Amino acid sequence: MEQIHFYHALKVVDEVCMGCTHCMNVCPTAAIRVKNGTADINKNACVDCGECLKACPVNAIIVEQDDFTQIFNYKQRVALLPTVLLGQFPDDVSEVQIYNEIKDLGFTHVYEVDGAVDVLIDSTKKFMHKHHQERPFISSFCPAIVRLIQVKFPALVDNIIQLKPVIDISAQFYRKKLQDKGYAQKEIGIFYVTPCAAKIAAVKSPVGEEKSLIDGVINMDFIYNKVLLSIKNSKKETKKYPENIHMSRRSIGWTLTAGEASRYSGRCLAIDEIHNVIEVLEKLENEEITDVDFLELRACDHSCAGGVLAAENRFLAIERLRKRAAWYHRNKPMIMPEREIDLYKTYLQENIGINKVEPRSILSLDSDMMVAMKKMKKINRIMKVLPGIDCGACGAPRCQALAKDVVQGKAKMTQCVFLQKMLTKEGLISPQESFDISEDTWGKSRFEKKNLNDH
Amino acid sequence: MEFKFAIEGGNFSKAGSASSEVKKILKQLNVNPKIIKRTVVSLYEAEVNVVAHAFEGNMNVDIDTDKIVVKIEDKGPGIPDIDQAMQEGYSTASPQVREMGFGAGMGLPNIKRNSDQMNITSKVDVGTELEIINYFG
Picture 1 (cartoon, rainbow over the protein chains, first blue to last red):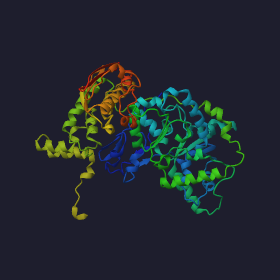
Picture 2 (tube, one colour):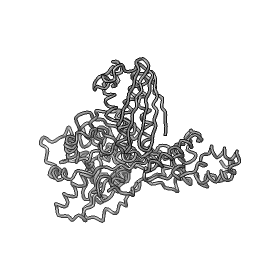
Picture 3 (cartoon, rainbow over the protein chains, first blue to last red):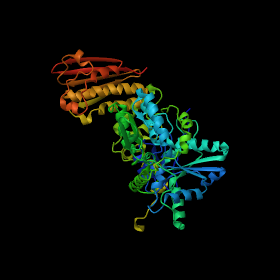
Picture 4 (tube, each protein chain N blue to C red):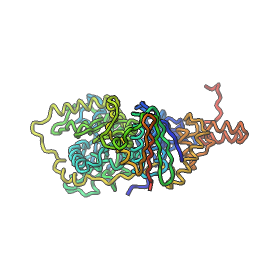
């Protein structure tokens, strides 16, 4: 069962928001309107991609996170890290230090989720072989993309691979491992350090899974600041890389662009940045692109290194991760010690499936086609009187969006400033009425008298 | 509801724009995604046919609550032997067109597969008229 209520980690702080329309204009699903002088996000349309946060000039859009102290509700506290976290720190900070500092924050275990990629690669190959008639396959890696397909490309939901992403596989591995050591379910707390908002939404309202395997989410910038502060204050010298741990190039490269696409045979495409992804999905839906086997689609530019909670410049972070991968590869042990996760491989692969992803289109005007057609005709009539310049002064991103809002009863035509002027000239509304409408959209404070001489 | 889109012969960079517009409309009308897909795939093939072979054409779309009827008419060379053109792999596309990834000779058969009804008439050196009907129920 899909949930009716969608959790979103992206929140608008009304006190800070100045209703400037930057976010409204970049939202790829047109989920944002300006009302009463602040941005308002439509929960059904938002896919948690974070474009609005990146565009906001006053940091009024934030990523809500769980209270950190909740980790202490559990005896066993596992921090699941994305590998991109290791690429955030300056070159003189060692991996050993990072791991140590995270443990000092209160975690009893630290594990990089991308250590589970081999389990997933193996299962994905089997899945694609078994369902070969359902090509092209779309990776379930990026939660923002899964949601984008649900709301905008409902015909493509069946192409999404029904397997858990590495985060969930790692969570399952660690939970099972600790249970086998004798800890009770309620003693184990698993926390994911997230580079983006979409992964938080995926934990709070999962798609294709009944309940998330993760107990809480911590923002990557929060961990970054804590760890870097402690390292700056302590002068302990450690080795750059830990001993007895080996991270494969597959694992370290997984969250970077082509990390998945480079692992499968056939024609595999890797596409990053949400507008690029939309372009390709449009073509895929029309079957303009055929004969593709696997699509790796990620919402952020340069994949997870470009996540909204990343502190470091994405190009520098990627360079560091590539160096890290090269170091591990050069120093690969002659005989690979058996990794713990391999002992659980059969168990993890038995539990790796997820349910079919259900479509929930935001595009349809009405569930009744007769009504939808009437509404479409009305939209076309409204479009003839709107100016068509997409100025956004009505509080909607485009004239088309205002017309759609009007027929859905969510807006009034008079919100259009051009119509207001015409109606005022014709004497159909008073200047005061026109002023009141603008105040409703942009808030009273925007129209307070300002003395030009003060500036 | 009726819509009309112009198709420009020879402009491959624009090929698919009319069928994409129809897709947007059908999505807003809450048509079953699987039927949208069938319809758009057949329209895209038909649109590419006009771009690849004709000088110019029109796509006339008529949507009712139970079906979509699309007429694609073009001014162009016409099809001398329709039965032959309906065979998979048969193509008269020029080498240049094939280099662009079009013209594999799957056009008309693919349209037939993705439509409930397909009617085609053609006059050599005048043009071709293609009618595609898909039912929503």
